[in-house]
Image 1 (cartoon, one colour):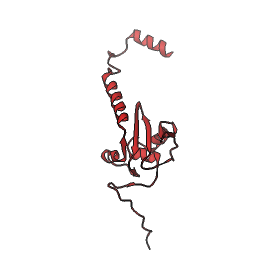
Image 2: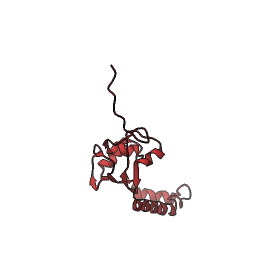
Image 3: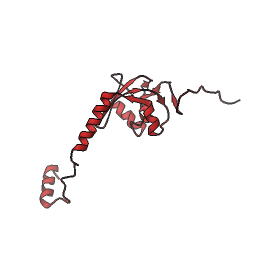
Image 4: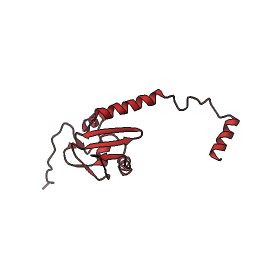
Length: 142
């Protein structure tokens, strides 16, 4: 007497299925966030919207849903193509969603603009001088 057999979903990759899945698990499996807790924090913080509405981390996401999410200064608008309970390689994660063209163009423009700006430490010339330290202390109140 063994455990009852579970029906396996037929898909191209292991761990993928069409059953509803928690949004924080899906975001983690699709590699938008490194951990599920970071994904849950993003959802709780309002940085993830499902079909135009806010969500909770336990919200079930299904194939065909549209997600708008903000990761750092980048914004993604993606359609859920597949669900996966496991976090796999990046190549497998890209099969889970399809990004809209306008979203991709905005994101690439933002990345190009950031690369065109000078490095934040480009003007630094080494250790602060005594005058610089006095200005820093005056500014920080220290």
